Length: 272
Ligand SMILES: C/C=C/C(=O)SCCNC(=O)CCNC(=O)[C@H](O)C(C)(C)COP(=O)(O)OP(=O)(O)OC[C@H]1O[C@@H](n2cnc3c(N)ncnc32)[C@H](O)[C@@H]1OP(=O)(O)O
Image (cartoon, rainbow, N blue to C red; front, top):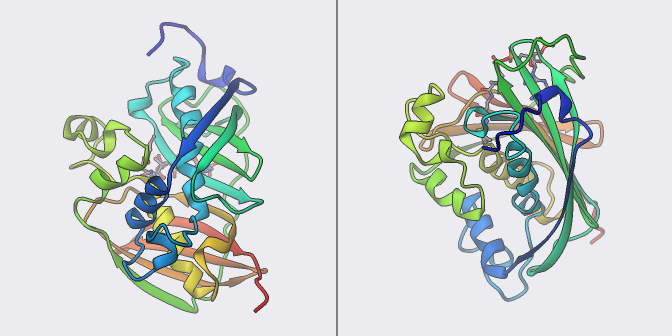
């Protein structure tokens, strides 16, 4: 961590610059497999006619969160991914180079913690990562938007048993935060063992709820959810979804605990 004394509340408005990122079909296929693509979903797992799950963009923008942590205002090892938004304007190519810019757009004072909004943007998509910093709130700043509290009538349900080695696999898509692999770091954060990446849980949900929306998962154009409790690799996700205001609303539970809340996915309408 850098030795600068910047305070968390002063991060808002910080530009993180721009990076060029290259990826290959292998990266896109690895991502698809990590969020549940089956071997017979050929357009997700086979180079021939490959399509890319739009939430793969979230792996490409993640450097902005790492760059924010490197500014020295907080210890990244004590941070938690609390919410995610993604807006997709065009299909992701199966391989290529993208230019992604980043900025810290807001820092909210949530009392028991601070919530930092980091935006990564390129021509075809915008991703907003909300990072919760326990213990760093309480400076008298604005609390920010509350929960939208969407309610929906579940019309679709599915179970997704996560493999016990899923965090070890998903980290190869680019998120090497030690909380997902290092038992000492997860224990220091109060967890019994390394936890699953929030973006892995969300990626599974985004792909799965396409079925509820009767859409192809690669036609996702909008995605949003809050991470409300940690998921441990090996947990079974109970997903439910239902229509809500031209979108598909969803939640995910592990047993009685809600792990994804306020989920919203919208898919492009494709005429047949
Ligand atoms: C770098 C890390 C990468 C990862 O992938 S980590 C793995 C994925 N993430 C997780 O597993 C985190 C799961 N979520 C949680 O564990 C908890 O959830 C939190 C620690 C994030 C917060 O829980 P709690 O400490 O119990 O706080 P509260 O009482 O739920 O909330 C305090 C205030 O903070 C607001 N808040 C919490 N989360 C969000 C959010 N995502 N967006 C906006 N606001 C949020 C609440 O509303 C409330 O504020 P109001 O008192 O004003 O209502």
